[in-house]
Amino acid sequence: MKILPPLLIVKLLYILSIFCSLSRIATIRHESPSSFKRWLKDDTFLMITEEEMKRFKRWMKGKGLSAATIETYIASVRYYHQQGYKIETASLCQWKEEEIRRVSAGTVNLRVHALNKYSEYLRLRFRLKPLKVDIPDYIDDELTLPMYQKLLSSLLDDGDYEWYCIIKLLACSGMRISEAMQVQDRHIKQGYIDIIGKGSKLRRVWFSSSLRKDLEGKMEEGFIIRHNQRFVRNRLHQLAEKYHLPKRPMHPHAFRAFFARRVYEKTKDLQLLQRLLGHASIKTTMRYLRKSSKGMRRRISQIVTW
Image (cartoon, rainbow, N blue to C red; front, side, top):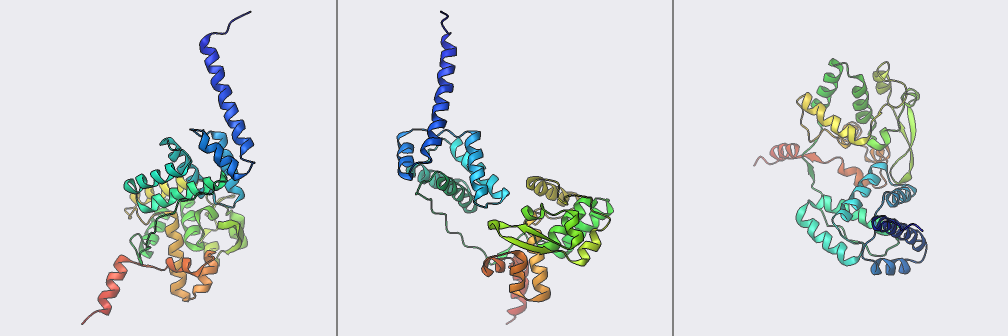
């Protein structure tokens, strides 16, 4: 009878322990939350595998979260575990206190929301409280009309019709980048698209006749945006640098805010704008109408002359 080498025996035992751990996770998760919580408390380490993250991803898709939010939440959960913390009340609270000293409040809240969602997925009752952040009544990264016009004219001069179409679509529809990635040339030609937006809500987005006319002969067949969201953000920064434009306002969501301000300037109809942007609350819509810090300074100078 052959005797296995000690090193091989150790490797086999390690693989067996991983298999038992994963089987235990799959079994206990379907039990009551209290049973799962006790199991977490007894164990010193919860192994995060690619398969576990895939299950978490599928669960979030079922909850109607956008693709961008899902990727951000997964990255945040991985970041938490890479720091050596466990999913338990004391560790979560300690991590939050350390994060407050390290990063901005907005980043802390983003990661807190991700861990709360992961806790919900694990059927744990504990939730971290996000930090209270006051939203300023002004913005510093406003995309102005001259910037937008310069970007379009520069793209046309270079014959870059792909990115010309992408910029026009974002600025003339007010769509989120995740929504705009669903648009194909046939939707532009028919004048509208029915999309599944944030919160799994179905809404119809209309395309103006001027946009259809402008993109005619410039857009290729198929999807208008053929890249992932990260590539789009990086490419916009590259275009800003290439055409000597400010980098801060050059991101996908800035075009949505640009659309909102332009529509409101022409119509003064807040309810119409709310429907066009697909907001559940009109308070969210009003955030898009904040003045730039330069505009606030100019406005107060016009008012206070005494």
